[in-house]
Length: 278
Image (cartoon, rainbow, N blue to C red; front, side):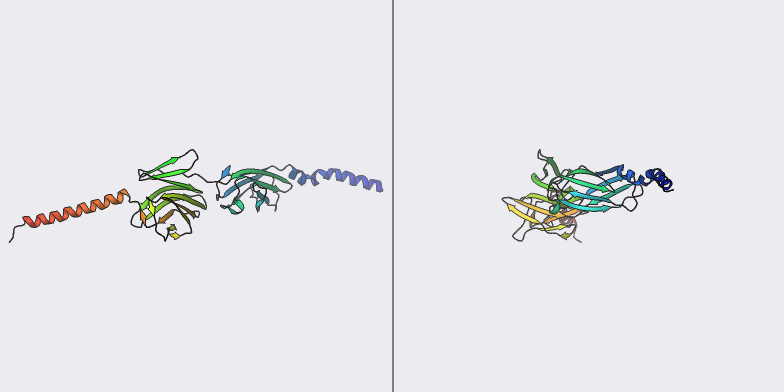
């Protein structure tokens, strides 16, 4: 009798074995995909992570860890998987701090019993383009540094997470207005000849979208170098000094006003001369 029961149990186990091991087999055959939106990112630029799992494990999140070039884990996270098997994560970075190293970073992914990884390049300065106008000229040197030419004065700059759309002197405010388009939090380092803009012992006053911001200014010979941080969404940087190079358009307008005023005065005098006395 006992041998019959044992035989039945063995047969039942053989029949149920594929079903009992189905989830484990499925997990071991799980196909995981993870990538970044771009192959390389500038310092301070957010990293966009995209991924896909082909078998959804209910209640199980994707676990990721970002490892620096020196092997330090700098960002752990758990990400929920969508009903179609996709997942995404935007990782904020910084200029310095945990993200100070430039080089190859690794994203390690675990989901259930399976794992995979992907690499991306991070760090350094992002070159910015400039929309040229008759007043501006942009040059790109072999070392990828950028320059803007204003009234025959060359301005060198380095920029992260943004591009410069234009630069305009404001003679009334004695300031230089720089229009930017940002991708994330970044920093502008610009070298300005003192022939273009200068200040006294009180130093420069710097505004980002109208709000005062902390900045670093240093004077070397006939040049000022300013380092100005800005946040994502910023549109305008204004550097206020005590002198700014006159803009041609402003001078032309003043000359026109003086000329018109002179004509009016001369016409009024001539009119008085030719009007007969009553």
